[in-house]
Length: 402
Image (cartoon, rainbow, N blue to C red; front, side, top):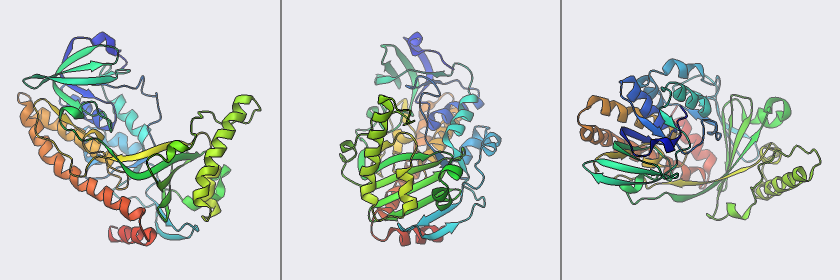
């Protein structure tokens, strides 16, 4: 699966998928199940070039439906995190205001990296061109497109699928929309071996997800399959706030006494102390999720496309996943929709092998209302969680949707 892009200059593909995230891989896999070949171009140098993120709850009506269409449902069941569906909602003083037990419902939790590996392993060798960064695309007429890569290589395709995320290079072919900052900034952190090394914090957050909210701030956690606690420190903040903090270190702060380690510790410690000034009156066990974090802190601005983002049917090209409907993570829909988008698009293409325009029309007819609904829910949940009285409102929301 590691054919280098530069060997594909002037190549033509009937179907080309830009991006090997969950949605792009689901599309390629479902096409493969139907005996249709697709070429996938991915900017990352390899499958392990970067960590893919934390836990995902995979919904029965969307993500799981896609995995069934991909013939991968049993493989999915094998990676489910037992107990991962447990949820706690806390005040900033650490009082548990609502708790759902770990019993399994229709939204089991899996590690995103495990799910991506299953999809990658299900594709034929050579499907994915790694290290193939797309820099632009243009229409050639009659639905065909030419795509240019960073190394100067070009290829053409009859069906171009933009599965290339928030800052998609394919989206401008269809829409002038760009993601806007939602007003929420994240800093991600980890506690490794939490049950033994960080017992008080581990006991507080529980076996699944935890939400601690107050005054436009939140500390949100997942217990991951390796026993670490992944934390999202969330603040309502100006867009440039994160840029005032130095997160540049990539060291682990091993404390061996070398100059590099001392500098690493100092930079990370300063970043932690800056964050902690925003949580001074919070419970010490919640503050420890920041203060005792292992390794580097990772800043992230939360962006979203307009809730009603759509485009006119444009021959030979469409979008899926975040490229089509980037939204905040507060409805848990992003990965699920990407998987469903990929599976439904591929199924439509397989059903109209001689008429891709009919397939793209049918796909988008379902895509737009579905994404509009979920994006609206995500935006509403963001407002709820970072507005007044968030704990009571979130508990009300949880108990109204058992």
